Image (cartoon, rainbow, N blue to C red; front, side, top):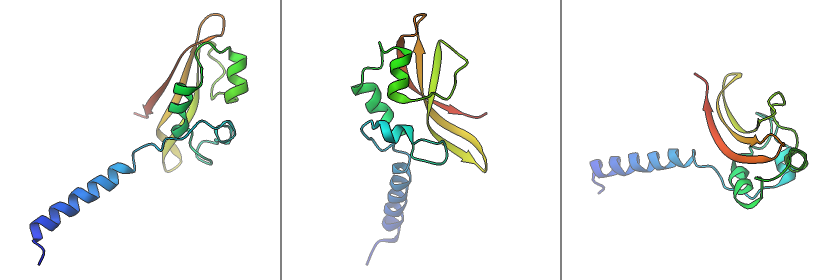
Length: 123
């Protein structure tokens, strides 16, 4: 016979573990075609590829033109010193409430000097 308190504790720990696994980002190799298929809420997330992109592809030192050839169009064009690519978004009905972006910073010559992943949350 199974000890009831022991079963409940095991069940709670197992459920907590399974729920936390849902928040782990699946690591993927950067794939240019899959990256460019991203359509916000309608398409594959870029989140799993972003870390590989930063770690294995030389982004720092690329020109803006080279970045566009590799990654396609960014989500914003207005700022000439910083741009971003959406990686993933979470929605509450129709409005995005949180997500991740790949943020790329340029110097005055439009050369990438920084690339990092930033989380955001709507307040």
